[in-house]
Length: 203
Image (spheres, rainbow, N blue to C red):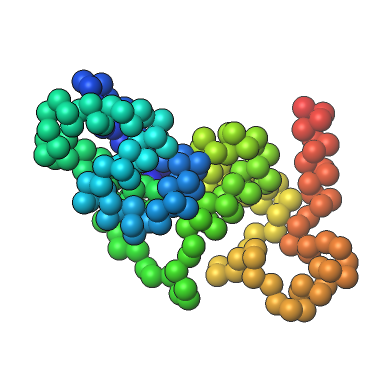
């Protein structure tokens, strides 16, 4: 889901409820259903799965049953399928309003659950957020915050800017041995970090 995008809302019992794709909701729904099955269940309007989606989005599932009883399954399905499908696409990291075709990633497709776990690690580790803050943030918010932090550290000289195509998690065998032998990553400027911390204390 794009950072700052309009919220996704469903109307139940005459009230609008936001479906927020928090990291917690994303992780739990993907773990229980899988992305493909989740989208199929929403498109097929599987009431049990949809109740689970609403529960993870902090909406009382009983409201769905009451709405179906009040106006009928067909009317509820017609009203909710669109926003529910949009929510599942947001969980998958897909922006339906983005007309730019995405390039297929090389190698095996990523494991969404592993990606969410990595984002939790970034939020609680690199960003220093509490676990509750990490779980309540959306993946887009965590990624944007981490990108901003990385750009700041590069500007202040704490991190060495990577060359195009180079990623921090890809090292040659020789580089890994060097890191193990020296006990430090040469791409990380610790002196710069200490100097930055010193400036922050003075400020």
